[in-house]
Amino acid sequence: MHHPNAASVNITLGILSRQGRQREAVDVITKFMVSREIHPTAVTVKTITEAANTMRSGKLCHMILSTPALRDQITPSSAVPLVRTLQRIGDWRSCLSWWDSLLPTTESSVPPSNHGGKAELRRNLRLSSYVAVCVAQGGRWSEALAAMRDASAHDPSLAVLFALRALRVAGAWKAALSVFHCKKNVWENSSVDLQVREVMTRQNAESWVPLDKLQTLRSLYGA
Image 1 (cartoon, rainbow, N blue to C red):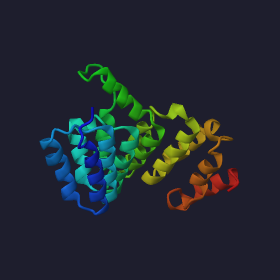
Image 2 (image 1 turned 90 degrees about the horizontal axis):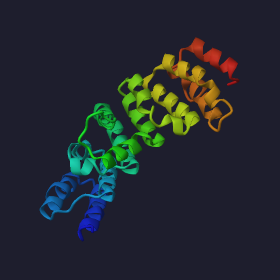
Image 3 (image 1 turned 180 degrees about the vertical axis):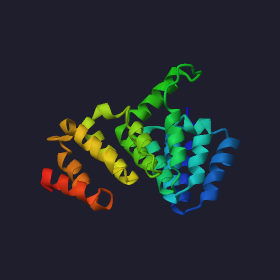
Image 4 (image 1 turned 135 degrees about the vertical axis):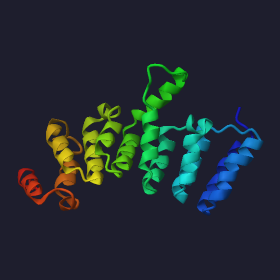
């Protein structure tokens, strides 16, 4: 049974975040919840990550990631605002460290149910695309692509689009051309065909793709 004050915590955090009162929000989590033995739920963690995103609060993000009781309650829906906040404040390292920690290990004391939660996070394509963009912001395009590996099979063509967007953020045009050509059989004539072409030939492509390569792409793909 949930603690009777748990709902009030979520409401209070929402109000404080809209008012930009980060310190008070932290106090609610570290003092009020602890003193009243209110155990965080997935709903609470989502409220915290949304508050972090609203206030661009790296402190709240780091609190979640460093507190097992909060970290273990992260779901795909709460992870998205968490990752978006880390991206907005430029903390791609914390994002990558957390994402890598979700990888299964051969020897672990973590209960199987928690492994299942970690796998659910890594297999979520929308979430993994946000992680990829965040990591790409640090120029780590190889790690950005790796971040999407577990989720790509669920929608291969959409995964190609997300990968190209991440590579654009990293400015990794060589890798983008490789993905674009090697995965042509995946994205061509798919529901994202036009969007994939536009990433590589339009949408300010001249800012990251060399002009000679861009001209070739445009002549081949009718842009």
